[in-house]
Image 1: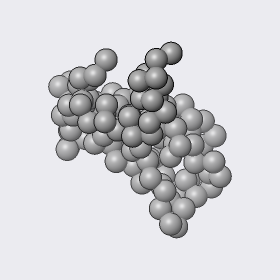
Image 2 (image 1 turned 45 degrees about the vertical axis):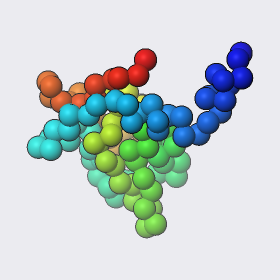
Image 3 (image 1 turned 90 degrees about the vertical axis):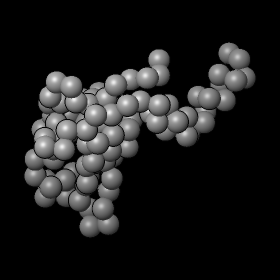
Length: 105
């Protein structure tokens, strides 16, 4: 493995730089992902959505709630899969013409 490739993999900001190259057409009238019941997140000990989202769309709040910002979503569906204990994520694809347009890779 070349040292340049290894350095880019170990660079924690590498994914942010790559995501910044993408184009997002945000649908302001319809969020394609929602937390169904914010109070349910308080029961979730692991809150895997925060750690597993590759675009960091989920953020913990000091009171234990989780905030989701769909504008930077890469539509991978990971949050829907990792929220398997409470199934508290309502996930669907964005409407046609909206969402992410990949520009890298």
